[in-house]
Length: 264
Image (cartoon, rainbow, N blue to C red; front, side, top):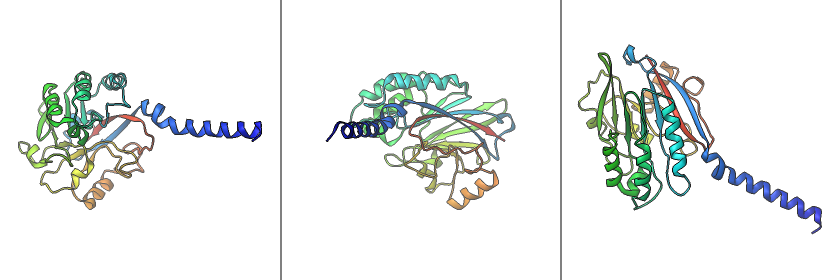
């Protein structure tokens, strides 16, 4: 092999290695804030323009540092949204509480005018369910199997949460058992498949944000019910990919903080 051929293959190999390492070493540490305007039919007028910051799948662990989680929390707080919701997979470990006890003191610094509400994902169960639930309750973010009203004057919306689809009981109806069927109800869940299960409550749903794992399900708020009902609501509220003001799919493997604005 002559010198020119050697340099050619060396350059080619270096380019391939750089391209392969970019998503893991560089892009995963970028933070992208997506903004969405979501029309909801029964949203009380005083909540028009109400804002939600949505965090999910932080996966704190070997490849995600404490400083990065701190950066996420700081940037989310700077959005100054009305509420913050978190939909699970806060850690990436199994049968250990080490990462749980490191990440939650940081997550406890999340602040929003009307509160912070969180549910757990399957990875939180795989690490240690009891410890994860302990931190949910200690930080007063726990909305699993429960709901709470958020008031603006005399108007209110109701925020509720499920258990994890794979590792827990969903109990959607139980979560909203103390709410009225005509109220605007928003459900937090980790797995979007939760909204395809059987239940009587009719909330709008805030599932985890996913890219390649769930193509076509990159929406922040999903109407509940069977697929035909979803399609009807998509068409009624212009809630589909062709409306960039509502739905902006992404395929970059970046960490995302989503800012949602509700519209009546």
